[in-house]
Image (cartoon, rainbow, N blue to C red):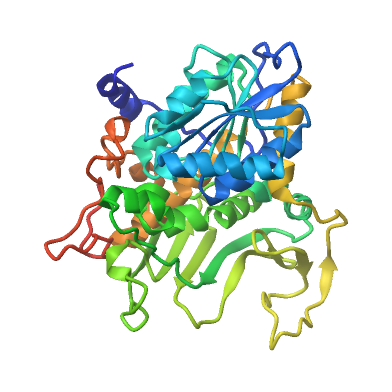
Length: 455
């Protein structure tokens, strides 16, 4: 489709129906790896998470090799290849297949053959366009892509449409909601859904931490600095709610067995005292946010976040039930179900009575998610984790939008949003202008409840 017809189609399509929290199964025929049994990997996006993901992909299967690389910045692409060669000597075979600029991903993907894998770890704003290209490629290329799956609803609909193509082709797709594959968390969620906590009443999402630090590079354009500081800008990451809190949003929705139908909230930038030295007026980071999500049966999911230094921190999900409370999710290595309603340790001492704990061993969930994907590829079994990641992403976008606007917004309204954080994503180039807006004083615009309008 052309960009115009694609956009028109996606705005009118209903591709976001909630699915069960398990990988999608497809009856389409599978495509095996190359005849020499080697799976070639293309790596797109060589930032911090990408550096972890590519090593986990190589560790997941001994007969894989890094075959092509693409990054916005040429030097970073070459440095990344050298770094992987240091840790996985003999597993790197890129030759001159190292590409850069914002369309370099197409060249890297084009180097692959049927049954190979691409690892998509670009800034999140590029997730829909990169996955769209892979899913609609003439070759059968399997995918691992990081969360979230988009930064706005039009982009998420584009990705959902591409996933329908991927399912029909039998493409195996893993998504970086790694806490789904932390064995103790998985066992705890299953126990909650089996009634160990009684009826689930409400859930809580917490991420209270210090701020990201903006690191501006002299001589870089606005767009280049934004791509180099992806967690500080909405169009690159989706904002702090979408990027950072999505894990425990997903865990809580998993426990609830549903996604919210509405949300309201508030938040934004509240402190000036800590801005000194952090260059905060040159980014779009929020300082705090509070969101209340409503489910169709009236139950609630509450979210609290704060990114202010020198404050008390918390990083987890909690679930309240009729038989007690559970502590689990990202940030919790030893989840458990406790008697009563006390969801915290007092004075560093945990005197709560444990009524259930998982028996599963601890595991590296980042590695496990790749192990499962490559196992499915080798065994020619279906694997598609996209739907629950779409649900988590749209729930996070709903909360961010309710927080920024101060409005009560339904999921139905949210899914009709036409706001695009990067309206020209297909044509964006590294030497071009930034899609982020600045005010008359040169400061980046951020959402202001009561002022910012829902669109």
